[in-house]
Image 1 (spheres, each protein chain N blue to C red):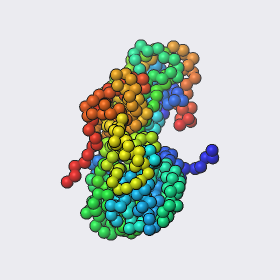
Image 2: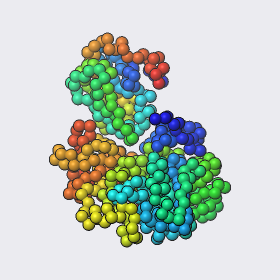
Image 3: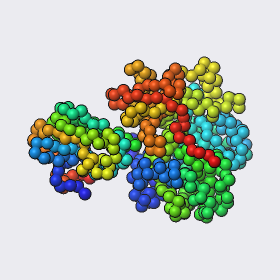
Image 4: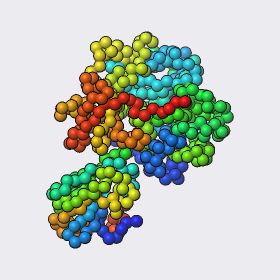
Length: 368
Length: 123
């Protein structure tokens, strides 16, 4: 294996200047934290945080059958996705599991932007290319061309509005618009991975620095801080958003992952449909549930979940939830133990620690 | 930044010897690398440990790190305060954030530890 140097986002120097601790993630040198994970987490919940997530992959699909192509490869209904809107979906395996989870933006009738997990870009593109020949559509990897920033938190609108050429406050959840931000042509999307209000900015890599600087400058008076991948992970977990490679992968079906809402059986045939129809009819045997630890121990990815001392499932994510000040996690458990309130144990390095199934999301913002 | 009144292990623990008791903690560097510490698992009092054996764990929000016995000995006392206030390890790693006190079973093991200058070189 040859050692390839970690890729750097266009904002690398700024992260260093902000005192970020950098880590290697999916082949990228990324900021994991700046001032401190808990600080950054709380800033996003109470004020605002700015994330560089330029490691995420982007691909464009266009052509007269672009929609049909994506209908066939993903589980959500692309046909009903309107221009100017995005949806969350899965790139499915024939067994109804996830090659990847992704966002699809409908740019035009026959043109879509796909946002992929950084670690999966290569295999996603290969999988899509394998099926492309049957459709009048083309697929281009644009991961290098795009930078991606996320401005998240209750102050996001107030920070963005003065530097956006068009009004963004009325943009609905999962809607996007193309406008100038700090003079840079940007696709502004009302989306995020934190459970908070906010925006994501898709912009040309050479404009990223200008937009970052403008947001930091505008945001400082609003309590904005740069936030790293560490806080991004704890924020998404409080909001019970799945993380590929932890909570979902190519061995977990969309139904088991409690993501049945993105599977549209009535839209017609798609890869994985048959397996999911069968699983729905027969019933799932395990499900991804949210839990709280009853003691002070923290469950972590990969720990065993046990019932009556016997191994029953696996923890897929676990952390101290900074805003809730609880020890939370996600786990696959056999269906009979999935009811809210039922108890089990997590094997924390050899010690059985009590846990309880709770309602999710763990955290939900007040929507006014 | 590195106190000169004590010795250090390569696993980023400090060892302060007073008479025949060694107080053990993790270094400023180690707590800074870990980030916000949210859980500390302490050893059992009276436990007999061999050098490099796992004594317990320290967890940040993101990760679990094991604490290794920097020398062989018996646990005399653990810092109970860390159970309720694990963040003390971040705020005062060389003082109030101490981890445990233990006996010194083999004095020669102290010699194998780093002095402040050598530890500073390491980090």
